[in-house]
Length: 357
Length: 270
Image 1 (cartoon, chains in turn brown, orange):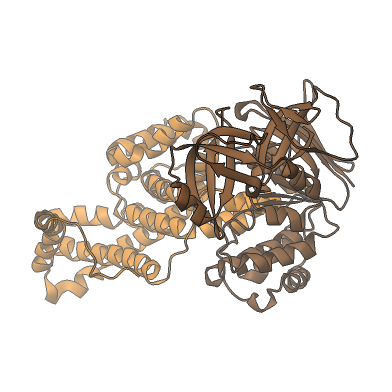
Image 2 (cartoon, helix red, strand yellow):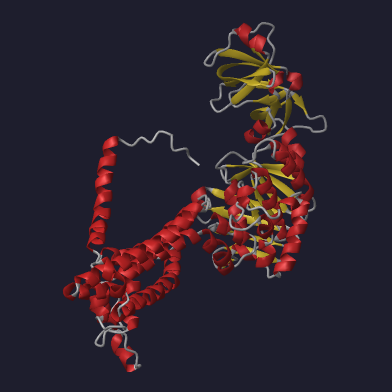
């Protein structure tokens, strides 16, 4: 059974339509306030959109248009929600927390506990059955919350940044558990973490300002980002413009040379982007001789350690444009780089990939 | 636990004023204790009329506390979580008995449930008479005690937030199941302290009861009414009974607050 949704919330400038095939896991990526949590609220029935429709298979979740005002309440939707915090019911132990869904569906106490034990074992938390939530660590509580959500047998599982509140030691185990239980299951996972998208999702949807900025298979979006957010996640610099024979032309008329996709014939004038890693950028002071093609003046905004390199962030001619360069600490010291300095970024055109936006 | 050796930030003069405030509460009780006729204490409080008044007070206070819970929980829920026109107005009216002189409350009840009252006439035709009966005592006590339960529970509901309820609903629980298995267990401490306050308020109720229910021995004469009556004829008896009332109130409040303090409070994040 597939899932389809189209909804708009005017007050939040939210308008999206998404669909999921049976067994598909989709990661929703985007900056804070982009509408990721609004989307989950609309799907789970905790937030009512101004207009739209949604269905899982034959089951209508809501249909709000001119004449019809059908709205099914959260408990009839089969869309279990797992939030950033585990939100385990503090007065119930782990087992009874997991048994809550089956109990609410009408199962007997014994049957519900049996189901709960199965799912606790599935998330490697069976030994924690008797513990109250106050005696569970963050990672343990979140695994129990995963079991609780799954025990409710949701048709669509909604995960709202499930790893965000965990410390770095607890996240890998939960990620492994999620990878196992999300296989062949319809799920939407909202995340900030590129690793979650890589490991857990078949497809990525990038949202910005309440709208879908781009979507596609996880690999493709991360290797060929078209939105600045996805480029940032993938650690790439992104320059937008129009396709030109040797690369792209930026809106200020500068030609940015790069490599076109070999199996793709661009039409000049088509909108395109040039993506390149910060490691392909060199930093120079003053004018550059020998005229490398991709050279442009920038103003340094930040310097920060990045692995064993220094990441130099700078703003380009276009005000919104932020570009990064990775250089060695020694080079940074030699050049005497400080924020506010005007320098020149030079990009090796062999490392720039150009593709349509 | 926070160590007591930390910095308090309380100026010393605050302690002086706090001590005066504390004395204002404690000194009158001490003064009363000094006036107790100890040799006659047991006979005084076990006289027939005293026992009747004490028994009536405990029974009616228990009944009105139960009524407060039955009516107050839904009221607190719709005030804290609901959305409807006139919500603020309803809250103001529910809180009104807190500031209203109880005599005024008693008069209002009389004009509602009395023989010539708004509902009283119809009730009278149905053969039900409320004014000047034990039911009137319970009604008067409920009227003055209900706001205590509503305020305390509404506060608990607000600070608990509704995130657990949202999760419970997405797990497939109907609203009634969510209320029974999530909301009420989460706010149980608030409900308990509200019920204790209501009981204590009911136990001390005087003005509304006297106005609406009168002072009939064994039927409507609760302990505070008995104390007021005895004060005229037998001051020793009044003092002895007052001490009983203080003891019962201290026991009720102390028991429930003491138990709550000792158990680790459930942390509920908004």
